[in-house]
Length: 323
Image (tube, rainbow, N blue to C red; front, top):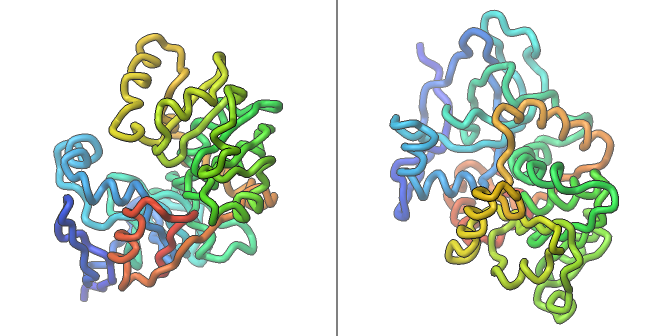
């Protein structure tokens, strides 16, 4: 008899997206795979992009195939079973990491993934709802690890979302002097992250900052050209997680790519680097050098409300789904 599980199923993609909780067959681990019982996952900007822009997903990620209907990149849970030949994990292990992008994700009670993928034993004493933190940190690490060195003056704009929270902490780990720019309601949180200087973006203090930063990261894709241009030193670097308001950063990204200067970039992690990164992040968490900021938590039954909240662009840290 087929065993079933609950999952959040995308029933329609695009601007009029819809999602339902349904019973679907529980997966069985193939050779070299592990079956994970999901305890917590997240709803991220990536998930929202996936549900809103199905054509991009079909052409770029699914490579002409049908986009997956169970989303969710981050996960934390337990290994329930292992496939033939799998030996890196055993049933009962608490694990966390990133789901493979092409297969069904973690917004379900169970999913399978290769044991050689982006999965690791959870940091000791970390609760499940604070462990699905890898995706935002993965994108933050792509630029922070490249540009932040001891003595570097770094500014993180939007150090309150998943990427910004991670970037502020990882920049400190790599030795940078960190200025975190956030909204008024996030000032205390940014101080908690260990930033050397915390500034409210609505105040004159932010507007008076000059071209004194070696590296500026726009972690929310909302800075105008005139804002970031007056902050970056002539020999400095700017990275953005989006194309900026109205796509205004596109010409600068193209010119930077054509000239090979790397002055303006979108922080894309190297292909195949995720498994190594998950273990790196585990070490940082165990050493107390990286902490999760959980902005909101929703039960699986309310996941559609979580998507609507994340789509406002106002989320704090990670938005957790309890499975």
